[in-house]
Structure formats: structure tokens, C-alpha cells
Length: 155
Image (cartoon, rainbow, N blue to C red; front, side, top):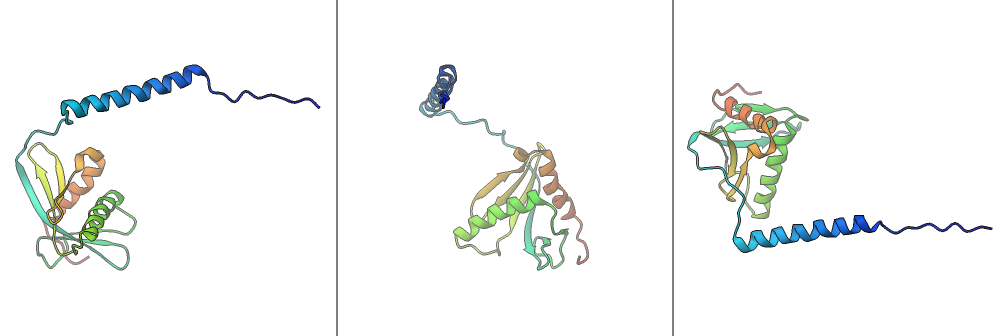
């Protein structure tokens, strides 16, 4: 029988390239830490519109959106829709649970003069700039802002 020898080593060029990339990355991170570099933040902007919102889960998987202390929902997120909105809220609610905060405090949705949208949880201090997730995802929250301007009947 003949034995076949397989060379299972990586090419030296690939290893050298990977090591160089790793070293460069570590050097850049170290330089940023030493010099105190911080990523650019958006310049301060004025609040154009702000709403206190409550999100209530319904038994069928829908989410009712209430503006302020209103007794009627202003929007309805149907089951299986608005995945981005649900994901953001899930993250904020998870943090509330970790801090033993209930669902009573509202979230704050804010539209800024420069067109940005943000969602804040004043009870935990968490702030989410929604534009960093792309215009389509931010538009989902913009629709909630628009809906909160005109209360609807019970869905």
C-alpha cells in the first residue's frame, strides 16, 4: 500500500499577514487609549418633539403603544411585525429587569432638530440613538412618533 502524505500547514504568507493585522489592531487600540481618543459624537441638537411612551404586551403577541398617561392606545404593533422595535424594547426591558425596575416608568422617544431619533429609558439612564441602525429601522420609531400625535380608538 502506498501512503499519501498531506501537507496540512498554513502558508507562511497567510500567517505573517494575520499576525501583522493583529499587531496593527492592538497598536491602534493602545494608541487610542493612551491619547484618550473618543469616537466622534453628534453635535448637540435641540429637542423638536418628545413623547413619553408605554408599551404593553397583549396576549395575542401584539404590542399596544400608549402616549403619556392616555387611556387609549395610539398605535398597535401587530404580532410578527416591527422586529426592530421589539428588539430594542427587549434590550431595554432586560436591563430594567436586571435593575428590578417594573414596567411602570415610561420610555422617552425624542426627535432632534438635526433629524435624529433617540429612545431613552430614564429609569435606567439607557440612551439609544436610533439612526445608527439605519434609516429603515429609525423609520419604524418615526411611525410611532407620528401615531402618538393623534390618538386612535382601541384596536
